[in-house]
Length: 310
Ligand SMILES: Nc1nc2c(ncn2[C@@H]2O[C@H](COP(=O)(O)OP(=O)(O)OP(=O)(O)O)[C@@H](O)[C@H]2O)c(=O)[nH]1
Ligand SMILES: [Mg+2]
Ligand SMILES: [Zn+2]
Image (cartoon, rainbow, N blue to C red):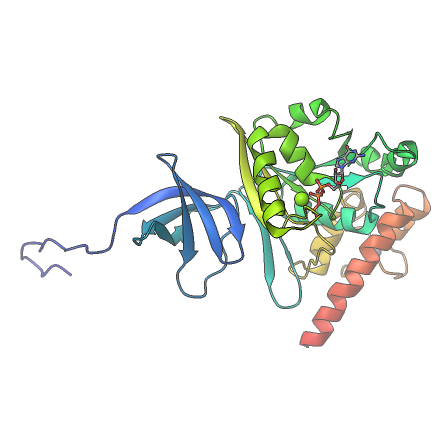
């Protein structure tokens, strides 16, 4: 501190200068950061910090040996994450859109789709659904199963990523999108078609590991053009939403909103209480049974979490 009235002593800053960068890959607690000059550097975090996500804008300090340390995270526009009872699991930062990738085969879980949508609604990030592998038999049945989501106002894009990506391309323009979904749905195939360089990288890694499967194990960001980016992410088996309050969960099912506030009980959980406006809307066919069932499974989970804490 400068002494009152005295001259400010020049403070010697011995810490290395910080450079701004973008996290383009997140492997557990190791990251790859693209610096403004364009070069990429492997980075660690300081201490046990692990709250950095792919897509984060960060400040790093070079620590010699061609590696860096992430010193700070710039304020995020958005953060897409899931959570179990113990911790948050970050998926991507600063995305403007989530693309939920499902496929004609293997069979996809509607419950997982609902949970991804809830996570997106809660984080105030737009969501679209891509139905991939439309070249396979029974594509129509899979498409029919998604009619519900079209009615809710979500875009559903039929796709055969192996053949043609044009149906998806226009939706990605001027967005930072993250592809999410179960394993084997075709997220990385979409990336490889969009980003010619990416294919080489995926092939290299899988040859090195000698594995037949190209399952994705870390989140990675790719530039599509000056204003569009896309993030590949590892396949999801579950999507925990422990960070939600029960009231948040109901809000995140967008078709419930007109009914909310009209139940007999102000703290109605919409799980069988008398004079529940959500139940009434479902009885009138305004809320699909499977969406209500999905909500109730989630509400039950959140209630059990609360009970465990009490
Ligand atoms: N028939 C058909 N197969 C496809 C299509 N897109 C992807 N596949 C196949 O589906 C399998 C899984 O594709 P990936 O792109 O690795 O799936 P992923 O969603 O990235 O899987 P994870 O990384 O494990 O989450 C691969 O064998 C692909 O060749 C498609 O449009 N049609
Ligand atoms: Mg993949
Ligand atoms: Zn209710």
